[in-house]
Length: 306
Image (cartoon, rainbow, N blue to C red):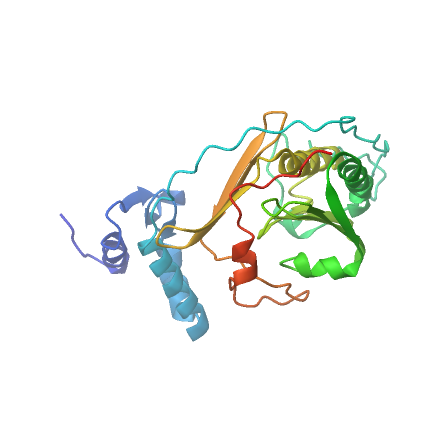
């Protein structure tokens, strides 16, 4: 039976009525929480922050509540197509430089294993140490470009004009290359090296991944791990297993999926509609979909072996 003995239960009961699958849940430090598998609301924090929120913040919160209220599971995806086998030489990763990075005190930093025992401290999330370790990704990107140019039937466009493919424009770029398959139903692939250093890969209509996605000390990424993820994604697109779906369900979700020839795969979705952009650095415009990108959502995305 529902009962209201204070602001938390009353607020929680109101939230619980918005979704049939919403339930009261135990939160951290015995806080009262209402939510579902996809989202939850900690009532103590909610009631503390709402009186201090601005009108714009409250409007954003109410939009989030509405999105949560109307959320529904995405329709099941179709099976990914089998990877195609290209003729010619297989891709070979160039050797990565063996480098040792140290703390200001001269102690070696073991990236990838810094937080094996304890969680990262709060300040590590806003600190970036030795981002130059990711410069090796530029060599990986160039090796992948050389492999695709030699192996697949593509038109190569070099220069800043291809930056218009990106959804979010980087602050400073080193080089930009677009590989356009010479068939109408295949996904273009744009590869950008940035000065951060990082590599951005845009595939198909809206899929855009950065390597590394985050270089902060808390994420503790390594050049080797990011090189592997970069190779898996680019080679999966080339092998023909990349897929996008939009809009999906009542919330108009966007989803992409791929499977690499080595058996690794990834599926990701967001309820935010994709944008047509590019958006200048430091600015975020309201997402909007446009006919050119919608037209690029072809049923099959793959390059054609030479």
